Image (cartoon, rainbow, N blue to C red; front, side, top):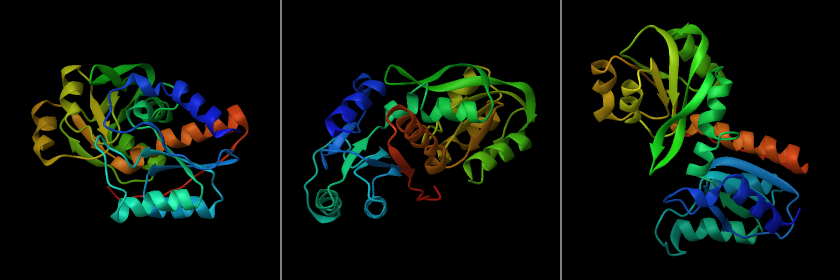
Length: 250
């Protein structure tokens, strides 16, 4: 498949231009003109690029790209990363907030479906746009069983701040680093809120607002979207696509 055609499709499908984002979403580094094999990953790092090259990848799609709101000199480690991509003819495509918010292949809506939530609705805002999701469980689930379910599906230990009911009927989700949205979830009357990483200054909010806060890792909660996007590309275009797992433990 032509790189330009795939980039055009991704930009349109992920609605890249609809979100204000410090990430330079879209094609960040241009490599091979023909794309036969894709790799997906959460983070853009030299280790990720090396594994992509070993897989024979023509294009790497990541959630966290190399460029974040300001120009960077192509020197030092940043220059080494870009040079490695160019020398190996690998294109780099990044989708940050657009891949969080997407209702079909996004981190938040995708994770909600994995966990069995129903009656899904938008939840939480990012610079005027809906980003997260909330829903209800067909049957209430104990807080412990919910934590176990999240751990089973994502493979990461879940930190629980049990400030609310021990039986959970409703859950809000914003993956990654959205700890403060536990307040949004409490204000909307939800039983629990799930995100990636905790913040020290948010610790007491769950207990003082009578809501359960759950943290399943910034990295692992954001493996969902790139995997769903890989599935979509396999189905849509018959492209070979592999996921590169490099957990950070955070």
